Image 1 (tube, rainbow, N blue to C red):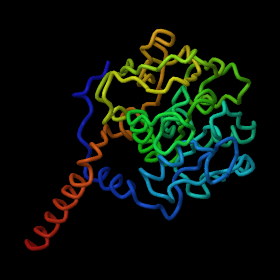
Image 2: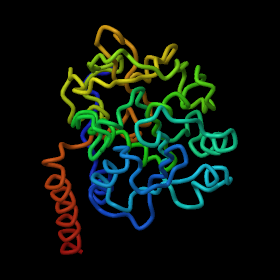
Image 3: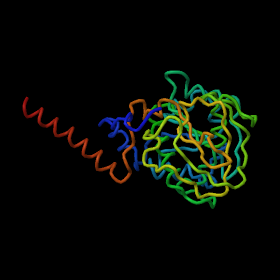
Image 4: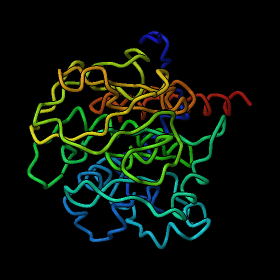
Amino acid sequence: MATGKHWAIAGAAALAMQLGAIGVASATPAFAVWLDGNTDASCGGNGICTSLAAAFGAGSYQLVTSAQLDTAGFLSSNGFKTVIVSRYDSSFGTSLDSIAAANVASFVGSGATQGGVAVFTNDAADNFYGATGGDPYDANLNQLFVNAATYAEQSGHGYIGEFNGAAMAMTSNANGFAALGLLQGSAGALSSNSGEQFQYAVGPIGSGNPIDSGVTFPFTDPDTSTYLTRITGANSNNIVDIYSDPLANGLPAVLANSYVISGGGQNNPIPEPATFGLFGVGVLGLGLARLLRQRQRA
């Protein structure tokens, strides 16, 4: 089991990359967001859109249709770094069609070169920043999403799945959805947990990992309108966080592949939001100072 001491401090290059991404509008959207193929700008109140805009900039994402994902090479040729699969409004969502699913799976890849993958097994997006479905904002869940999205995007061909998107990411599912096979395990039917509040605890990979940076465990989601897909047969090395409430006790809440778990493949944790900018600028400043000294010696 990994512990906090195994997660190294971020290098200057990674910090500079992330500093440039946070809060700055992108010329080319990094995230292709599929919400049942709906492109209404409101995103049906889904908090994924507003959370991405707040963390990465207003131009960081583009809503995409099923027809676009049906086009071979669409994601790569348009410069997207990560595809996010979720649902429109507060519905349970639908499935990617078979062609789109094959294209997404090809974009993300498999094995040692697979892009960064992370999934949220419940209706977490209803609690992300800016969601308008009536569920309470949860800063911990939003931080988990932003952290995961940061590292998935860093891979250049990542995948983030929420609820229906999580079910599709697994080897198989009970919903009749396309199975992308990005992570080992079987997803049960999208269902209710009878209104019980989700309680989150650290999973088998241990505490202090980059996805959990800035999140205090254990914590309880304040929402009482809670739904999930029960994941069984998952690789314990992919289970980031688990539920500890009675009805879902021990089930995976957040899963990810090794690229995301290791912090972009480099063991780089995300600094705390309040100190990140100053720390990143400081690192860049040190680099410039060294460069000037080297030129003076020449």
